[in-house]
Image (tube, rainbow, N blue to C red; front, side):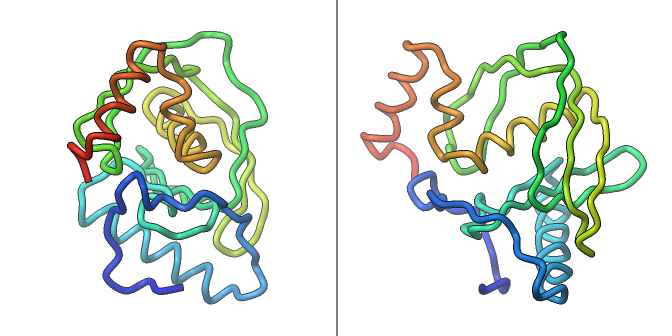
Length: 165
């Protein structure tokens, strides 16, 4: 896995098969965590997932109010009933705005860079970002699948015509 000079990949290059992170090489977990954290900070992002930079690992990094979270193999174990509609953008789909309903809070179980299992409740923007990135970890088409028919058709036409990378 090349962790040097990473950058966003286009939607076509988002890996299809995302693999659970294997903690056999703990040093690699730390390197991957640091690489994604540094990239997030350099690009002034709120969050990032490994597939957005072409890495086939199930990893999300979220900027928190108290501290940042690096989550390996995250999964949502509970959500609030309350939802909110957000307009979302994604650097891998430049020029497309996604209008998507997200739960206002979610409880996420994940592994830390050291391999320990943790569960945290995230609210507001952090909850939205986690749900957004779990869509990416699920499938590069998952964001498109959440759109209504008209928006999905428009987005697919933009992608087909090559108006974006």
